[in-house]
Length: 300
Image 1 (cartoon, rainbow, N blue to C red):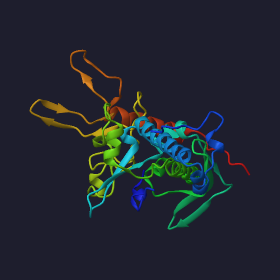
Image 2: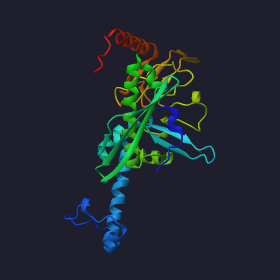
Image 3: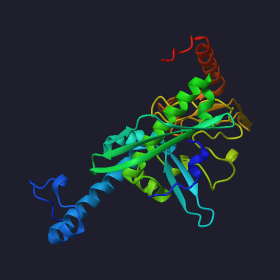
Image 4: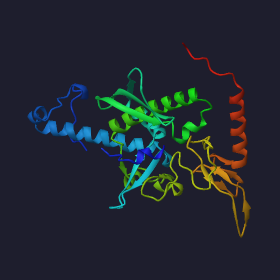
């Protein structure tokens, strides 16, 4: 995720359950209607609270630290987490969110670069809630667009990213996972090997070169190299520069945050670790193959 997301990402036990004939879809929704039910109305609200809270916690447990970017308020020191598109795709199975993009898109060009905005409506099956006129916007100046080999492919790539951003915005808003306190992430991950220490860092944690966002590389990471994906969990691998110490020297490599080496068994735990030189060769070969392919035919 590019640093554009840094500009103001704002978050937005029942003792008596409804009878079997009272499905959530037909239970009265307004405060006045629920008030007329007295104790039963309060129980309905309490039951809904528990269901939503359970869904939120289950959603966070499904995500990986690499799906989140942390932001720190320089004035208060408060740290909140922003869920990236990769995480949105993981939690959609819980909420049943359907996004319907509207036909066409808005393209704004300036200085040879452009942004594409896609609008649409979204519906959450779990909460029976609609949100209309949601936008998703991405720019040709973002890192991911650099992998496009032609202007036409760049437009297509940015358009696809804008649609993904639209879906992500819809899922974040309908699930209430727009901005989550860091402590709540760790609370939901308690008992697992997941921790906010492995999340990427955004605004408030230093300069762009010092942060590790989705598309923000460290000063040591090779430019224009797409990170490998873990074969086990699907998370983006983190770059580890080469170096040396008293025990010897090592070459640069990429590894999953959950990767671990068993010295006794002499093998890893299934999560990926890739040598940087090997990965660069694979990426170069893929780029050459793409360049040799015939150009796509554009429908008239």
